Length: 104
Figure 1 (cartoon, rainbow, N blue to C red):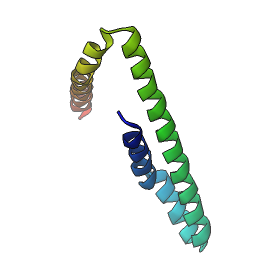
Figure 2 (cartoon, rainbow, N blue to C red):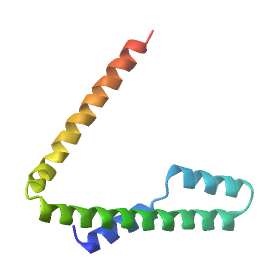
Figure 3 (cartoon, rainbow, N blue to C red):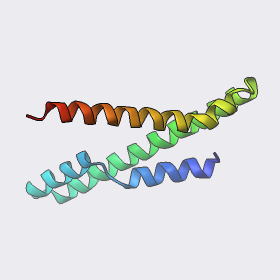
Figure 4 (cartoon, rainbow, N blue to C red):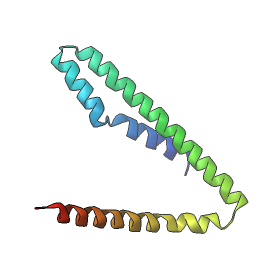
């Protein structure tokens, strides 16, 4: 992962406000404080972008460092998406069965 990809990830993630930020904006609009709502959402988005870029940079540097010390790590990293997809499918099946059995 390049530095440009990490920065782009942070910026795109930070530009899209989460439902909590939209709720704050709507509450400020209801109180007729549009400027306060816009500033709060802007600050929230900037903070989220900084956090995403920092976490992405730390993750990328960590992967590079571990790959240099442990050559077998790249093989595990290539298989990790398959493991996580199996885990998500298993959780979905569990939740579905649990929900189905909970129906009267």
